Image (cartoon, rainbow, N blue to C red; front, side):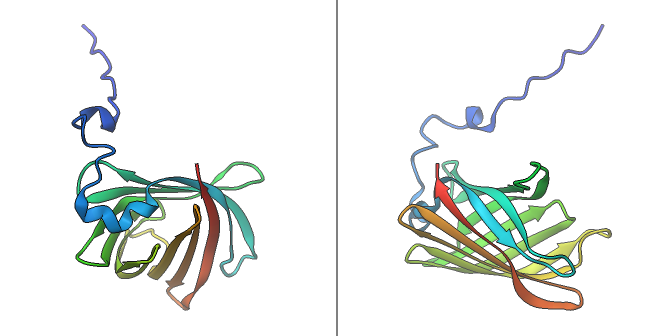
Amino acid sequence: MGVEPRSIVPAHEHMSPEAPGRLHEDLSELAFLLGTWKGTGEGVWPPGGPFAYVEDLTFEDVGDTWLVYTERSWSPEDGSPIHFERGFLRTAGHRRVELMLAHPIGMTEVAVGTVAEGAVSVASTAVSLAPTASPVTELRRRIEVRDDVLTYELEMAMEGIERRWHVRSRLERV
């Protein structure tokens, strides 16, 4: 007797019907981020030269006191993946935010910062590395929304490399 494969039920089907679209009051300062954003970016990191990428970011309301954050980027030339991030953005009091992310390069990140006037700025307070991870030591991000355009900038430091600008993108809400 064989075992029937389990069907995977999308996460939104497990939520109460009133969850999506009913933003928790604690998230009102982050409402400007909600949705999916798509566009292009540019970056640089030693020892390589400049590179271009296509990116999408999603900030999803699930009816709780945090947003689900998803980032994907890929090569505009051949569609190969460049980077992924998954995690959560939550408020930590008036105009304070916390960002928790997992990266496929073998690291996790906790960052804290501020939200004000359509912008989120965070700096890492903890970076944890798997034994084979890229040796990242620090990250800083700024996400800003103006007129339905999201701009994103990331600075990064690694062992032996001081913090410097790494990537920036310009995304539109879809």
